[in-house]
Image (cartoon, rainbow, N blue to C red; front, side, top):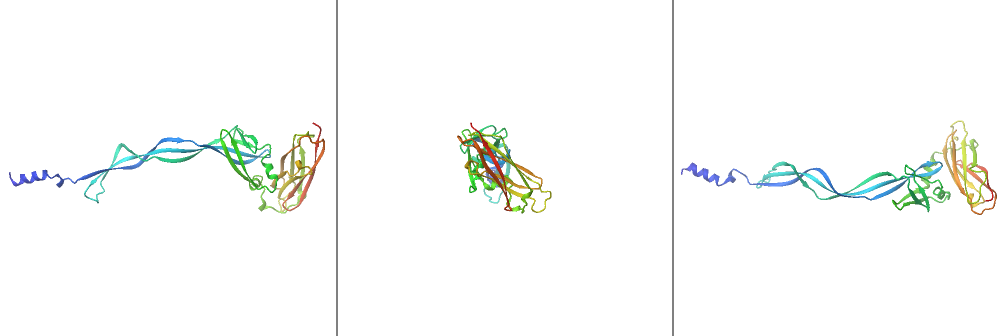
Length: 303
């Protein structure tokens, strides 16, 4: 055996001379997708102050779903082969096509707006209200706005509830009402109330005890120009020696020359009240401090 043969045999018995010792490591690569494991729904609703409809406050009721979703991420499978004995070797990176790595379970929350709750009854202030086909609830009994006839009443937490949908709380402030009725104090001008024309009409000529009397008060600004003092900020209030006729607010707000506004308020006639004429006045006060009054008679006949 010659030297060349011995050298070749020796090299074959020591392959590390030609081949470095390697290590294979597996890593998650780019996230491909999520796989949903479970989803838990938590249905609830919220109440929003909407607008004025037929002289009444209205609210919009929207249903939501606060979903809790449990899912796992799916990643590409990446294989890295590097020299075990070389710390500076970044290795050879290979994406294993068709193979994936599953990550740890993750939980996230998703808020989903489902839409208006239509044609459904809700309780509030011990009264029953019903939404229309668009999820709009109108306070046609004027239960809510009557809270603010007390001038000391600044805000309410209105609880709307339903056996099927739970409950929701809306904080309603006097400032919210002023904004809705266009009562804007910071832009008032000193006015000339002789430009205002008032009229008041009951929905019926005669009433009986226990009925609801509906009055519509109209105010028109007859000023011909928009000079300073011709834009009004007007609030009205009923005055009477009879408590059930006294203290109803009329929020006319701001209006410019040529504009006419009408506001309707309801008065509950007490049961058993004697027939006769019952008197009240509705006083209008604009922000200049001037006052206008209109006398009104409500006629009650026997039941």
